[in-house]
Length: 240
Ligand code: NAP
Image 1 (cartoon, rainbow, N blue to C red):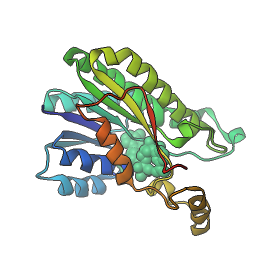
Image 2 (cartoon, rainbow, N blue to C red):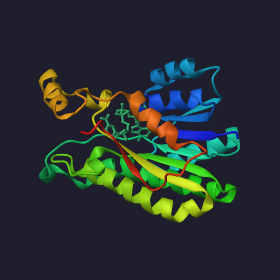
Image 3 (spheres, rainbow, N blue to C red):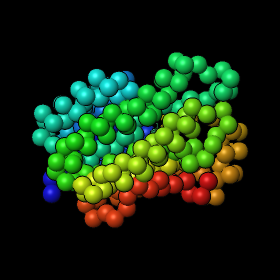
Image 4 (cartoon, helix red, strand yellow):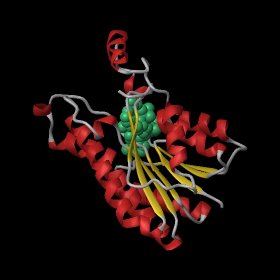
């Protein structure tokens, strides 16, 4: 069966690794990114010859941009059966310093983007009686995180979306799952000092940060046609 996936936040980190994993599986891919033009160009070079692809520069926190992504995907490939909602930003700070602006930025990027993309894609998936949706949540979507209240709330919301949407869409052949990475070695965690990093690694049973590829392999599995997993939030933390 021919497959087409939209991957948001494809340019770097976990989304980039997911892109390469799905390219190796022969998916047609829509690579969504916001700022990293050079990184998308180098990714295109890496996957060239493995699959068909289309790169779209868009801010998926904006419903208009998300719609543009979906329409361009449909124009190019005719259908979308797989949606990977991975784009996200971290946000660290004391709760009493949060504002309505920080709320909008974090919730729109981490949650509204997934809500909008699901809304756009689910109509066609229902009509086609098949779909796979993977939302990239976080360990902080499963547990509370001090100084990351907004981030954690946005990632909890993604898990609520995942569970409820799966309950509603699985009868139409659409399985919706979330992955919840622990601490993964990407730009998002570049701000840690060597000392902070050692301190965190001591709390991870495997003794190191995860690799983006180790998240991508789980996401890739959740896109399989032969799947009997739905509505789950799967920890990818090595026990952290
Ligand atoms: P990253 O290296 O910072 O990459 C973030 C990606 O999201 C980039 O491709 C970026 O595009 C894209 N992006 C951000 N805002 C966007 C927007 N408004 N519209 C379109 N694209 C946007 O982050 P990462 O570590 O790979 O994280 C990926 C996902 O995993 C996020 O949802 C994050 O919350 C989650 N996660 C990460 C960790 C971790 O430890 N790294 C742990 C748990 C969960 P540009 O490059 O164009 O800016």
